[in-house]
Length: 405
Image (cartoon, rainbow, N blue to C red; front, side, top):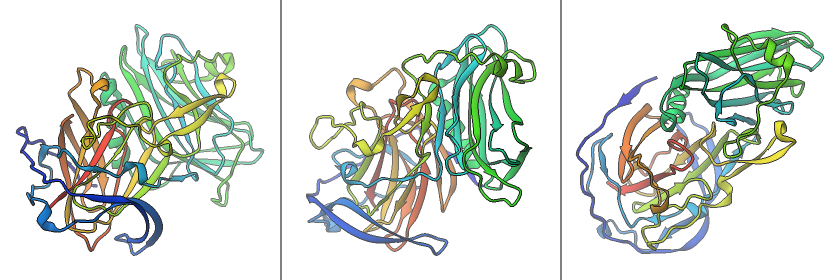
């Protein structure tokens, strides 16, 4: 799969003449992907009344240019309809984020609802020596099963803010092919462990399927645990036997969520943008000069069994991916950008972004918070599909603009 990295150090200026938009209305459209499949859907969007090409200046940029992110674009986020892919539940292990002793980090007995699930973990080693972090799977189904890996990635990093996108990039680059990792009889178990250097983060993202001898999905009958261990080979046997669950740190998340994949379709006009982020993070609305919260359909609610079924929330960055279908109503360029509201800004002024564009492969770039990255030249007679996730920590939302071409 093709990987591209390019950064233009000098941002270009983009001048936009504002356009008027009507109130939101419902529309039904059909997307055709490059594989000949059709997907029918309904999407609410703000439709242009005056969408004449004369109403917008038409600068054009090279792919992968970094530009000044366009201001005063119309947000359509509130009216986009998200679809949750509940065939792939998501198990997140991020609490306690920092560990200084061995034990169980998180667990679930309900993870295998569909015969396939995704694991995402991110933990920092706060011990004075190298430790291991990994996941453990036990077969409680009463039948022989296969534990199979599909797309997967693991990284070790000192930069917690960059960690999620580094894992996501490697995940996108990984193979779609199924790899049979282990065959387990009743009550047998297997594990995958990774060394984590002192003060480093260890993080991973694995898509897993559970099948029988006929390669049919097996639902239920799986016990999943993430763990930290001092064992020099990453073997969790002692940790599993002691069964000490490390306490939730209270501000990160762990638990099982109904979906690892969210998707939506966008019939974009030039001069529109979509924004998504944590519900409590205010996204800048340049039209109104005031922040507004993202809709509730961008929030995933789950259950943490390790904390007596406590309700937990995932805002999109911890192992969750977004599949975006774009069929523009006119020729446009698609621009990605990190975005922080005034009260959410930190000392970090740039973010690492990764995405998979069906025409271009896996793309990566480092983009300052007020800049945008040109990722597609999109024509009105074609459908485009992008896969991405939120950049950096949960406090770094994402904007995607359709600019005139």
